[in-house]
Image 1 (cartoon, rainbow, N blue to C red):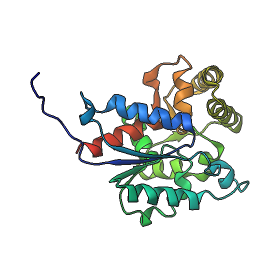
Image 2 (cartoon, rainbow, N blue to C red; image 1 turned 30 degrees about the horizontal axis):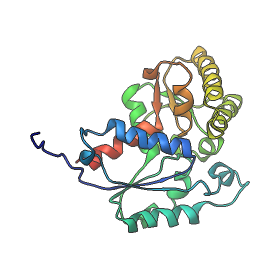
Image 3 (cartoon, rainbow, N blue to C red; image 1 turned 180 degrees about the vertical axis):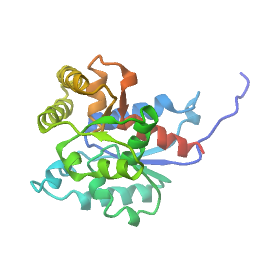
Image 4 (tube, rainbow, N blue to C red; image 1 turned 60 degrees about the vertical axis):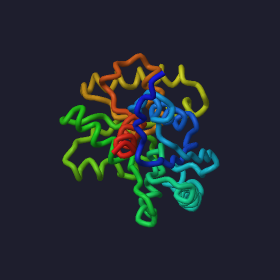
Length: 236
């Protein structure tokens, strides 16, 4: 067989996952599915730490739990020591804490919140519904960056946010079908109010949306946005 030229990635990616495990596994699947590769050797080298013991991020933001910052920082520095040229964390809420020490990192962090807002704006310049954890919503991280680039986010009422949190909890518990059914119901209710795309601003929510039977072209997945941004840099 003729030896085909190998398109090698230019950077190695360090992924801090486990928040939660299903979302991290989906992120790795997306990296493999979206990579411009035809053989093993054209896929990127990925160093991954899956640490589900990191304290709950939403609880910490709400003042109800342990600060996850030390463990996040330790793991990201460990990925740097392993040889990562780029870092990615497929957990939106974690970035509330990562932003406090992002300047200390020795290699670039591909920021899931920035990339998701940019992807949402590319999909629909008029705005999108933001579904997330309660902690992410209250942190204002998405709202702050959206305002910075002139993009409008529509924030659901507390009852809808509570239902979105329930979707997230179902995914974390491995109950994908239940999460999908609930996601379908709450999204259809939102679309009765305003028919704009759904921005899944928690990494469990894309899995719930995928199981909902709703049209894929009407959502922005934070997992997919992060994977696209990472691959763009890896293959520069």
